[in-house]
Length: 615
Image (cartoon, rainbow, N blue to C red; front, side, top):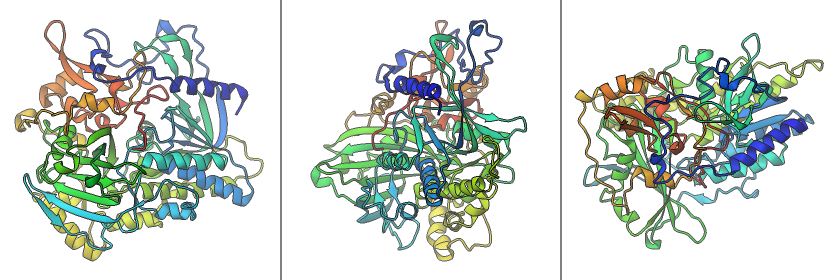
């Protein structure tokens, strides 16, 4: 990289590291919307060319060329980068591999359960134990249960079933990501944190030739600040999108290149998680528990996890609840269902006398094999959860995401190596071989075997039908069924109007076992500059009141797990939508579940968002 571009990156990284805004209990008092101001001012949505406030502002971007650009520093992106440099080192080649990550630190936006199956890691680093990977807490106990309102019915965990965790490890995935980042940098990967990629770059033929990072120094009304600096253009021969579930550039690529043609719509869930310190007598390192059933009804996909960590000198457990975003009751609140789950008679004792330390939430892909889009596009490819390789019955997607990054790296390496010596440095390569390679991998073998489990829920029997299918048909046939079940279309289309739904009366939080949204968001260490354009953009500012509030009673204020959306009274007593973008923990649920598909999540200034520590 040129001295000029490195200096630009250093300045942005320094800015990203400075906490410009902390959202706690007072976050709601400083809303980004007013009764008269537009809700959407982000430059990704508003054309600045005709705005007189931007006249005379230098809009030229610094550009740099790399061989491979990876957008996203999670397990898939880092494993792709590592594998590429391993292949380069083995072949005596030196392809430039650049990875940008919107979090301020590696793993800062990573959130997962997580129980890790080490299959892909064994392939990437056979000696990972000797290398000091933060993966030491082997699963020792494995339990599954079905909850009713007052009781718990034990369910078997058959050997070699998707729920069998023999040989797996309970991990803090954020710590694993940070460790992978260290390995990547040691191998020569150029890794830049605090950089959000705001748009894909295209050549005249429509081929992706890289991505641009977000501008900095833009005020919340869309005007330039004195500190304004244009984002950078990072141009590449191959661009890998590893943004995780429902990333903004992934969404752009899927729509532009029609990557879902002939594939089913993705279906999603939202996972909410807390870290607790419990009493020593209640702590059992290596213990894994999962439940299905209560507090949701049999027609709502939902289940819990409770894992006992083995941090030296501490008694930590992680717990969480996942709800399918195909739920139909507009009054359902995933956050409050999670809080209610902790009050179950078989769950409450674990937390009594303990202390809640952390909170977070993230959307996840649940569509499986049927919902994987076309994986390559001109100039690039989708890897990891950007494509959607989660094995739903296993409740695991890290190992499949890692493997997809490794397979993509092999494809990219072969394509680069096949270029003639006199090829221009900006000549892009085709990654069409990536999808056939994935189809031959054990990732697709896994997903093919369990492809019918999630859609088997979509019958009048709901949960009970799924349990019967998973415990009978799937376990016996291992995916050899001569049919493939379908999902139900887009999650956003399934909410029922308020007149058809029964309001849910959630109990008030007690501040000891159950909590409110604001005190929870404070634990995420979320930071955003209060004076930047809201990154929760609307396609039409009039839709929230005219449709979402009028028909569905404002579901945004319930499905968001961070209190970003509120319907409040203006000075005249009329309702208006208030967007508290500073609270956003980047879960992407609003972009997925909005019944009008009016919300478009885009990246905020680099480094903004939650600052998870080992989540």
